[in-house]
Length: 47
Image (cartoon, rainbow, N blue to C red; front, side, top):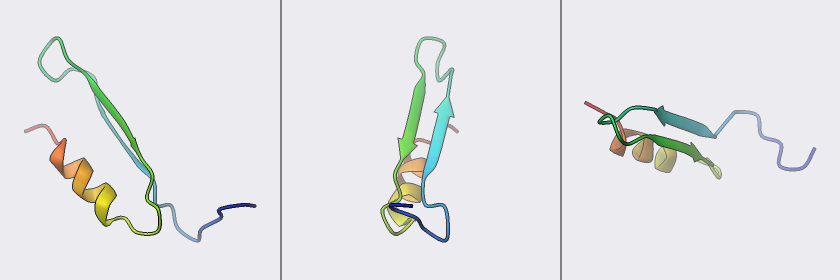
Protein backbone atom coordinates (compact mmCIF):
# COMPACT_ATOMS: atom_id res chain seq x y z
CA UNK A 1 0.00 0.00 0.00
CA UNK A 2 1.39 3.40 -0.95
CA UNK A 3 1.96 5.83 1.92
CA UNK A 4 1.52 3.21 4.65
CA UNK A 5 2.53 4.26 8.17
CA UNK A 6 2.70 2.34 11.44
CA UNK A 7 0.67 5.05 13.21
CA UNK A 8 -2.16 7.36 12.17
CA UNK A 9 -0.82 10.90 11.75
CA UNK A 10 -3.95 12.58 10.41
CA UNK A 11 -6.59 14.30 12.52
CA UNK A 12 -9.80 16.25 12.22
CA UNK A 13 -11.65 19.02 14.02
CA UNK A 14 -15.40 19.68 13.90
CA UNK A 15 -17.12 22.68 15.45
CA UNK A 16 -20.62 22.74 13.90
CA UNK A 17 -21.84 25.77 15.87
CA UNK A 18 -19.20 28.32 16.84
CA UNK A 19 -21.50 31.29 17.39
CA UNK A 20 -24.87 30.42 15.89
CA UNK A 21 -23.89 31.44 12.34
CA UNK A 22 -20.42 29.96 11.83
CA UNK A 23 -19.09 26.39 11.63
CA UNK A 24 -15.57 25.03 11.24
CA UNK A 25 -14.52 21.63 9.91
CA UNK A 26 -10.85 20.78 9.36
CA UNK A 27 -8.91 17.75 8.18
CA UNK A 28 -5.19 17.77 8.97
CA UNK A 29 -2.64 15.64 7.15
CA UNK A 30 0.15 14.68 9.57
CA UNK A 31 3.05 14.35 7.06
CA UNK A 32 5.47 12.48 9.32
CA UNK A 33 4.91 14.19 12.66
CA UNK A 34 1.85 15.22 14.66
CA UNK A 35 3.30 18.49 16.00
CA UNK A 36 1.84 20.80 13.34
CA UNK A 37 -1.49 19.00 13.36
CA UNK A 38 -1.71 19.24 17.17
CA UNK A 39 -0.83 22.94 17.05
CA UNK A 40 -3.55 23.63 14.47
CA UNK A 41 -6.15 21.71 16.48
CA UNK A 42 -5.27 23.71 19.59
CA UNK A 43 -5.48 27.02 17.70
CA UNK A 44 -9.06 26.21 16.65
CA UNK A 45 -10.20 24.86 20.03
CA UNK A 46 -13.33 26.58 21.25
CA UNK A 47 -13.27 27.76 24.84
